[in-house]
Length: 150
Image (cartoon, rainbow, N blue to C red; front, side):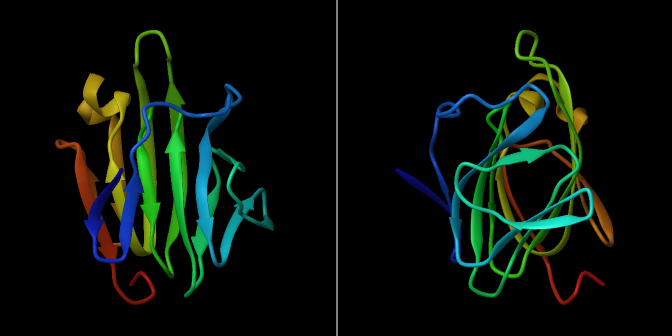
């Protein structure tokens, strides 16, 4: 079942991560189409389904690209074409569901269905754009940054 959030974005409904994700990882790329890049520690690699996403990664999609990411707390994110998402901080306690998620959308479109961190403590989840900071108070939202993130 797909949950359509914007004309060019859709999030796949999942109840949990299919494969185990290391405790030090933020999540996993569930879907990748077209050009998807992960930048980690100054090194760029192609992003494909199954790749681990770390708390300090920058994920970018090209003009033909899109990606679906599921975080360990079951937050689901869909990146549209020409999008850059920088994971700033991610921490999650699987027992208490406490944690923190900070991410920045530098350009493009991001659809989000929030997970357990936002349900446990909404103030612990923030998404930033070049001109604003979004505190999460709901469960589904779309962020669009036009141009080059200016």
